[in-house]
View 1 (cartoon, rainbow, N blue to C red):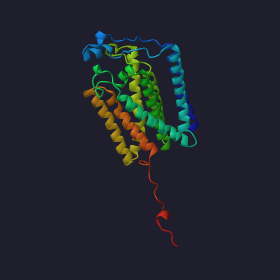
View 2: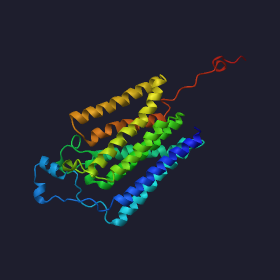
View 3: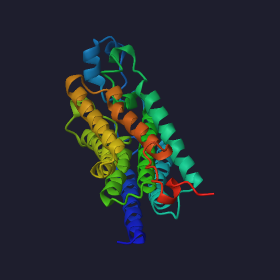
View 4: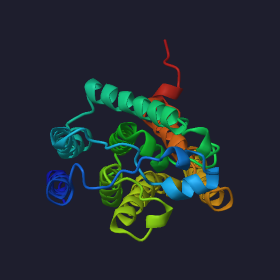
Length: 304
């Protein structure tokens, strides 16, 4: 397929995703759709475990002040998803990577890293336990819902644009990588609009939608990076081989910690931090760049 045809397929995919998202937010969602439960004084005196079991997944106050605020958010987030199609065109298929594109990608990469790090160390009241082992990004979203939305947008945007930048810089044209990255980074927009439903509401459409799209973002977002790393691994590039092993090892470590320690924002952030570091080094330093071999003429000193 020609580059022009692939660009139309990719941008068409993201435009279609944006349309579906906009329809879902307009038809099936509502600014006051979910109940909000405010703990009473008696609830606040419960033991920590009982309090979490009862109120995990419940917002303390309505997220949207009114329908106007909701619709402004719907318009903004839908337009942003349409811009993902534009990013594909400007990063993957532009004649060359401009300075403006480079500045935009490095700026949102740094912003994404800084925000998810800060967000991950926010805390609930002391009843909710240790932030390093007990509080997840989704749980933080119940206390700080707008911060959770910013977290999702920045994480999605930074991983998406910088994965595309990595592909373009290395002239990698793998179709699967672009598709999984696009779908993964778009899915988080559902996660941040459907709050966690709590332990008592696991088998509900609300909770299943929240968890499913969060997992899609995590796995497909990581897959977009891994697909590229494996491509380089097969080329026997030693630096990329080490990077591949380290990145996969961190993902395995996260899974082990989730099983043995439990879920938390700190554990969830581990692969994100490594991905940010890796994307920054690949995209904006020369560490992974191959040094051009000198030609025979360059190696032999010129005779005077």
